[in-house]
Structures are given as structure tokens and as C-alpha cells.
Image 1 (cartoon, one colour):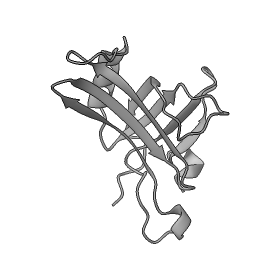
Image 2 (tube, rainbow, N blue to C red; image 1 turned 90 degrees about the horizontal axis):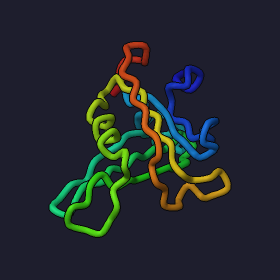
Image 3 (cartoon, rainbow, N blue to C red; image 1 turned 30 degrees about the vertical axis):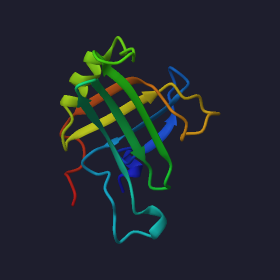
Amino acid sequence: MYATDKADVQIYVDPVNHTLAASGALGTARTQPFAPADKQTKEIGCWVDAGFSGAMFTCQAITAAGQLLRCSSVLNAPASGDVPVPWGDGFAQGIATLNGDSFLTFITDLLPAQSTSDTAECIGLRVDNNSKYYPRVP
């Protein structure tokens, strides 16, 4: 039902950057225990890991078919040699707005020919908080 409305988790080639991207509605991308075994797990979201040495965020999507796409970017790194992305503050602000009514899109630097299991940098993030997405489901 959600896939026809493009609210389900999808991994695709971004038409602007020509790199891999993922999108989906947080309120409907759920594990479905009564679905066929190969279509049970779906998820999309982002998280921040922070500590004394700095902070980084990661976004991850898993489609109903089991395809995984993940990207990470350094937000700040005061105690390490890692170089933060210049747009890190914007990413952190975007992630902070995520909620159960969010439709999330993240864009990676992976080219379509690369494996989705390769290490990817996040280069774009869009959060759409809108009531048009289906109500949250258990």
C-alpha cells in the first residue's frame, strides 16, 4: 500500500547528483512480522554519535527487498584529525527535526556502479514534516 504512494523505503539514483539516495516515511517504514519473510524488515532514519572527540551522524535505509544504503559524515572533530563537512551544522539541524511524521531523503556520494556496502559520505539531507504521510503504524 505505501509503496504505491512512494512513502515506503526506496533506494534510487538521485536525478541531480547521479549518486545513490534513499527516501521514505518514518511513520510507515516498519518491520512487518506477518509479511513474507523476505519483506519483513524495512527502516529509514538517522542518528548522531557524539563524544569527547567529536560528533558524526549516520543515515541508513533498508528496503523491503533487503537492500541497504548507509552514509555518515563528521559534524565536528575538535579532538581528532578528522575534517568535519562544512555543511555539518545544517545536517545536525535537519536530523533534529525528524519525527514520526517525517519523510526523509538522504543523498550519498556513492555512484550507482559502487556497492551499497561501500563507505559513503552523506552529501544531502531533506526532512519533510507533513501530515500527508500515513499515520504511524505499530
